[in-house]
Length: 367
Ligand SMILES: Cc1ncc(COP(=O)(O)O)c(C=O)c1O
Image (tube, rainbow, N blue to C red; front, side, top):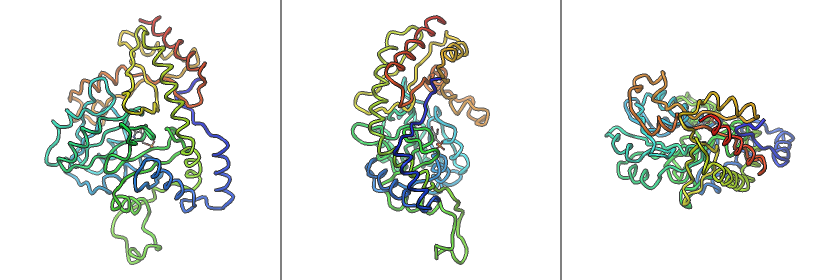
């Protein structure tokens, strides 16, 4: 079966994991945590990288780290993973959903501009599927309005905007290691150049403890365990050391798929921006709405190929019922048309070619 993405675990992961277990340091106090954070900060090109239990952990602490209060407004793209909106919602901030740019999977700077108010505190682009958002425009908007720029890099570790690593442009940015470009089982990391934000996050991800003299006499605020274990950090470090090689494989995979789908009936693709580096967490096709998605999925599965429909934009979820009537045409169109197809690092060239041609033939047969 060709899955959407299978993590690759090699001998380096086994070796580091064994070292961590043999050392007895299996909790978050072990040395791999620090090594992983240090190398991650160097890789992204930021001063600080602080690990945490997951991308959702980073999101959960994001609003407290940045001092977001009920009544503040945060602008996020609607076409993204649910955790982004849930975390903001839980902080009591008002969520403002923005559209994607036309034929892009990332937030529209034009729509963002229209939605800024005096209460806007955060603008958070998601680099969806490993593609960079329009960072020059977004940074300019944030800088001139004194707003935090928060990059969701969960699907885009190693992707670049021009020559800058994503996660190094915003004020405070976060990554996920749950079957992403790095797959450490579970895990997350924030990246920032701001010492105060890194320190605040470090504090919030730990429960108040007797080891911290300032809290011996009683804790002052909520902080709970959102730490990464030494075992997860050991696997993460091995994955980070192989990441550049894996990204090369992903880029090659996308070139092969692009070539197969460029003249396909019923399938469109959105090419990568040549000036940026897309890391293709998932390769996605846009399926003609005349094709029945259920049939397409069924036929793909008969050929041992797992495919999955794209995101329902968050403003259309029953949970966000106050936003259901909002019209975000680009996100709604992309959400309906997008289909994720197998994108694992370890797919061989002949397998990618076979998957591509099989899906192309299925689409042709159903149009
Ligand atoms: C865009 C995006 N943001 C946040 C997350 C949350 O990350 P995690 O699964 O590590 O909690 C994910 C996970 O899939 C994601 O894709």
